[in-house]
Length: 407
Image (cartoon, rainbow, N blue to C red):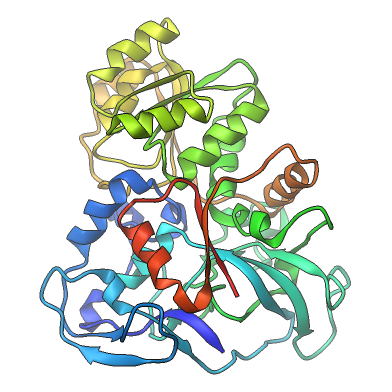
């Protein structure tokens, strides 16, 4: 089976479980952070030596041992080659991958950062769509799609037994994880296993390429906007890092929902991109922009979708209106900014964490695709055998839209 995977970590101490309270990224909540600030953050976190790397970018199955100096790229730990086909437990389905997409979660995994311990080879990928080719031993769940169905994998795996899971709040399960974390294989393989209950059937009008963009980035954006911030038509929101995956998804979903977007970015080209995506205002991502945002909105935005953390936190708090909300789904630029508690309590600012989205929300996104209300922005489509180039583009923050991998 051809797969993209974490081939090794140089030092077992590098493989650590992400601790949200300590500001680590790489858990489900930061699976799709903002690309603009990711490059420097990941490079700073990637120090290490002694990795197994691919010999020749994109050459499947050919690997060589290599010693990397401190500060070597996490991409040095990426391998694209042959692995044994995974086992299929009872209640699980095997999906023949048609399309998958990359997320910053994959970069964190290459750094050895995860919500669960990593034992290389760890197959990467949270998002994937394809065809059901088999079910595990035992009875097939009554709701399972028939063999041969075109499906999208919901990437969140939960116990399905606790009170939160039974009430539809699987994101609050104490045993929640994502595909590609710990013992769970990812989607960047010719075939990948997924719980049968996590399969969303795709209408004929929805392509695997479009569907594969939904499971992390668009789902994260949707949950932030409509569950955590509870935005309504006529509201205004602020998003940072205009070309990042979540930012692009926010801008597209906001246009559908009648919500105005103000975007920030570090260079003029990216600000122009935001305007082309429908932003009503695009500014530099520094604190001085808060004054212009306050003036433009006559008091501040209704909500901030915060995925960057330390570099943009003060701008977020200075841009939101009194009793407004800052929704945090990642901290790609740093997880421990100055809290600015005086401003928080004096202006009664609400701060809400947000992680991924629910199974029901993913179904709603598929509905938007089916009704042609949503067309995800795709930067490029790359075969799995040469996916290393797409990983490099993600790591360097050079993409505008989703990086899709096909089998």
